[in-house]
Length: 419
Image 1 (tube, rainbow, N blue to C red):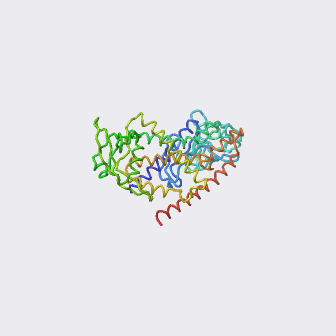
Image 2 (tube, helix red, strand yellow; image 1 turned 135 degrees about the vertical axis):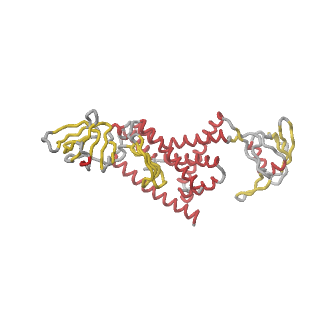
Image 3 (tube, rainbow, N blue to C red; image 1 turned 120 degrees about the vertical axis):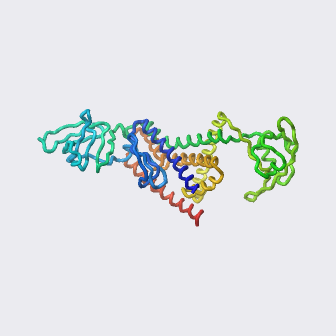
């Protein structure tokens, strides 16, 4: 149960932060955001704040921000339609009643002759049960459609995604992956402040219980000056000497509170993947500093980004197989292992997953953010956008292929861990 809770929280945080990036920068550009969703499928929970409906959906396989204009508008008002109109204090139409007009006795019922609710914001028509005089009505920029008792805000063209500059649209899409990298950086910075960050100095860090270092009298904070008369000044030099000396006594020259102390230690032999190395049961020294944690967080974010990109490169070149990929099931099992090691390792795992999500979304694959950015790059080169229908078809095919890949990876994970 603890693993389930941890997995749900990690998944929720990663998707929330990613989609929050899209939402914030879309709203900054003036785009009407109809829905902010965590998950796909049927709604489990929802509430509305300002113009946006915030929802949690049943299937935990991602999330989305539904921006006006990205998909064809659901409701159209065409010539010949009978609609009802309700007006605001300025005399402008603020509600267009599509059906069940008898439930709105104050509505003015007209037959539509012309309607443009995106650019001109006007409706012309003939009022029923009156002389057939053509009337024109101004529509409020904050008007709503009412259909089956549900209100849907109308999106004038200047509130739609496609009306914004190339830079604004690019930032609204890029902001999702960007927020994943920012989240990872903040987690690493917090860990550096709360837990400390490793420093490459010849100082003894935390000792494991009953390890050779502990039983020999070594203490946390001791500064190692030399091992077997070989001077050392970094942690890497200490580790290198210990690892090549299993079951061999080493004489540590220690500086402890200004006094020199000689301590003999015999590293214990430890075999991993068929290779035997020496260990004495000490951890790398850690330092806690707010100022030091920030550059360390940036370095760790960069290193993990580089590592993940290198792994993807090996997958593309065939050095890794698809069987080495993990989907939700594989991530769940890894989370189960990491959760047993404590909250700090779980937070570090969250940061690594956040970087991974950011990188994957930036890949130039249709249906992903990187695919959208690829079309924006083509638009910048051509000087005009690619046909929306053609782009939509490419993204649809890409989404279908991604779902197929997810099914294959998930089935591999199930066979690997449960069968």
